[in-house]
Length: 293
Image (cartoon, rainbow, N blue to C red; front, side, top):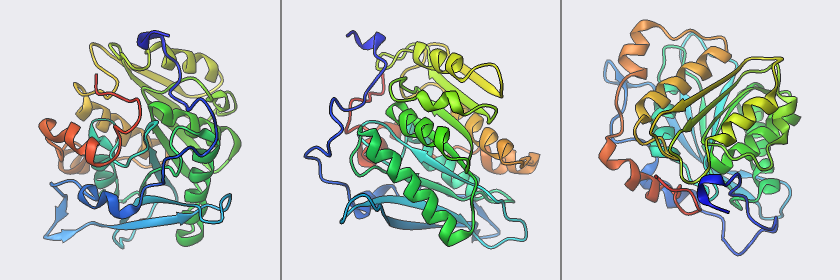
């Protein structure tokens, strides 16, 4: 199948494969972006390096970073979980997950954000359980029971699998999603969905997102944006994609980002264009079949 017509990066078999799950210490160099958001010389959030137990495997545990807002008077009742592609990883397409997590957790009403890896990348039955375990962890430890799920590429599969089965998911968003194993999107409406894709994507065709838009149906809040001339990682519109996702996550959670936070937080550039690909390599996001073109 030609790359331009592909609709799946899922593994051919759903077994665990031979890849050993990553350790959270493998990602120390991408725990946070080099530029951080501070207020009056005070950091506005903490980052916890986690290894979350997954109960389908005696030794099963999935690594991730949880960005937790510092104690402030207003606290949201939801969190976001960001998922990467067929190789796993924790920085996302064009490293936008690092920025999104930093920005949302630093808002005046900070939003908790988890950048979650997979134990067995590209194997959706295991990745789905990883997401459910992360949701259970956040609910048990922080009394948060509402979640916005975001996935890149293969990540659309666990996003819509979990979103379609678990009412704790209040909205879903994807960047350059595949269509394979995404049937759960049919059960998502009327909960909101945002679909972003590059028109020149050579890894997964933008028709994947268009098909998901149709599968979602007309009964709810569905949004799609195809970036003209952009690729699988949205390298030409990374800053705009960050802004759109930050706004969407806050909006579906019932928060309005103030103009001050828009200017001082959301629109800040935390990752240079020249370092985005290198950070993806360090963060494990290019271990699979995902590409930056």
